[in-house]
Length: 268
Image (cartoon, rainbow, N blue to C red):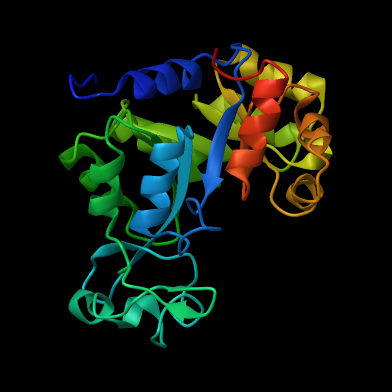
């Protein structure tokens, strides 16, 4: 679904996302730009758009009254000035809380999924890490906001992917695999736009198979690779993508951007 309000940058990102053999490596910003703003906050997402990052990763949960909100943990304890489980708060009670950053309370509220989709629409791709059993409601909201080409669903099973695409073929997905056998099984069951691999099956045979099946190859830099890059060793990213992975989720999108540009692996 195309939208006249799409930015030129979004069109470029979207074209690359749907071109698994493109030389461009896409950057996914884990929970937004969370070194400058509270993770999973509107400010962190706005900054990612401002920086021209390709994808924001967000964590979707539901409240007691079934509102869809963005919070990584099952509780609000770590990231807000409140305590308790997200799904035990009503939406209005949850919105009274404020997100914290480096231990300080900010003015940022917990965003709703609708707010993030509306912000991102036609500007940046959104990876929906769904930590709720309300998947049909998430699908409904994506259709309602007409953001089918702005977001993709992170799924842990190939049959979930099949179910999703049968319900609405316009919905995009990223499917989690843990082995080469998982990759084979996935493509015997369904199609997807992207496949999440791990270090242990980050080999050319696997990445070639994924790309030849029309999907991009997602791998995480979170943890050791990001630590090395933050300490000055940007070549750590090179080790991650040398076998053909072409979507990287990182806590340091600006560092990855710098590395990819230096290697001619980003947009001209």
